Each structure stands twice: as C-alpha cells, then as structure tokens.
Image (cartoon, rainbow, N blue to C red):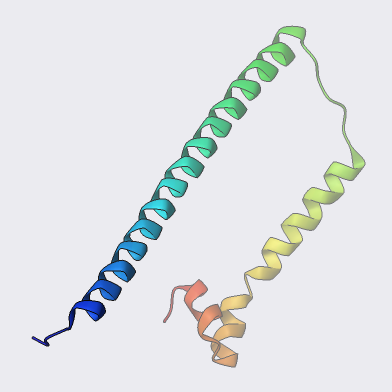
Length: 104
C-alpha cells in the first residue's frame, strides 16, 4: 500500500466524491427518464383504447388506400431484400452481417 501525503489524499477524496456525485446524478436522471417514458406509454395505451372503442362503436370502416398498399409493398420488398444480408456477410467476411445471421 502506497503512503500518500495529506494534500494528495484530499485531492483523491475530492475526485472520488465528485465521481460518486456524478454517478448518482446520472442514475437519478435515468430513473426520471424511465418514469416519463412509462407514463408516455400508459398515455398512448389509453389513447389507443379510447380511439379503438370509438371506432368500433361508430362502425367506421376505412377505405382502401393506394398509398398505404404501396407503402406496405415497399416494406415487404425491403424485408425480403434484407434476407440476403447473411449470405453477403459470409461472402464478404463482414462480422456485423454474420452476427445478424446468427453464425459467428
């Protein structure tokens, strides 16, 4: 164990306390953010419940949307194209793409 003089000891204690306070503040901020996110998800669930109840009670039916159908088709095509990533990752020896395929 090293012998530390009094001024160095005080400086180390100050640094240690500063780090401890920073860690505590960071943890409190994380808890606050998680609480806000929890309330936001609860509010979203309440809104969706109320909206779906109103729509079902009113008997409202949406019409087909060409834009919505096209968007869904583009999304499906993109998802199918991404299926080729693992094969390309193995061929290129890319570690990120190989991990997506589940083969390290």
